[in-house]
Length: 140
Image 1 (cartoon, rainbow, N blue to C red):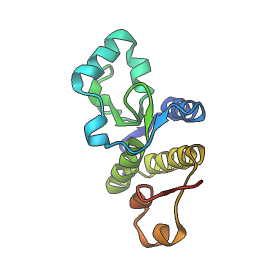
Image 2: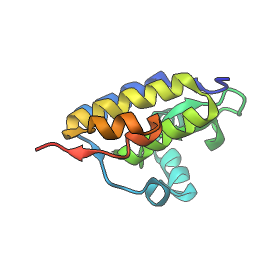
Image 3: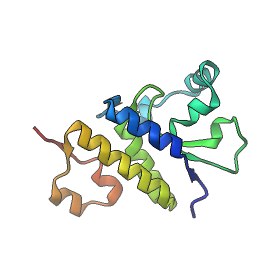
C-alpha cells in the first residue's frame, strides 16, 4: 500500500540534525508546523531540493516542484520536531505505509536517545505503537 516513497535524503538530513541536537521536544505539531506562506517563502529562499529534505515521504503521483509532492514533514524548516516525527509515524501506520513508519520510528528512537528520553516498559507494552512515542519519561 506504499504509494509514497521514502525520501532517503530527508532521512539523512534528519539524522544529521538530530545528531547535532537541532530538535525540539514537547511541541504541538498541529500548532507549530510551518504555514503555507512560510513553506512558500522557504522554497523561494532555498530550493525545492532543500525543501524536500524536510519531508520523509514523496508522492510520485504529484507534480514535481509542488508542495503536495512532499509529505510527512519532520520539522519547522529549521529544527526537527519530535511531535512531527510522532505524527509521521501515526499517519504512516494508519495509512499502511510500512517503510515510512519504519523510517519515522528509527528517527524517533535516535532523537529520544539523543535527548535522554526513555519509555517505561509497562506503558510501552500497553499502548499501540504510535502512542508509545508520545508517552515518555525523561531520564536523569
